View 1 (spheres, helix red, strand yellow):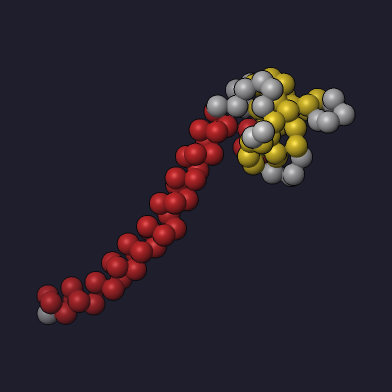
View 2: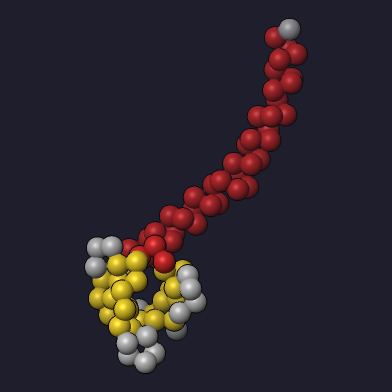
Length: 88
């Protein structure tokens, strides 16, 4: 009885382990790297927003960035809407 239970649960445990190492763990690493990238942004950095706008950081605040568009118009951007940093 005990052996049957173990052998029936083994595929489920293996499936969970595969799921964890192929999906959950890489996603956590990517989220951590994104959070570190946002924390490291400073005045003058160029970024791409989730909406696809390419803007330059003018000022860093606690919850948002003041950014400048190509026509020099300034706007506030919530930190969670930064997609990536543009590297030259």
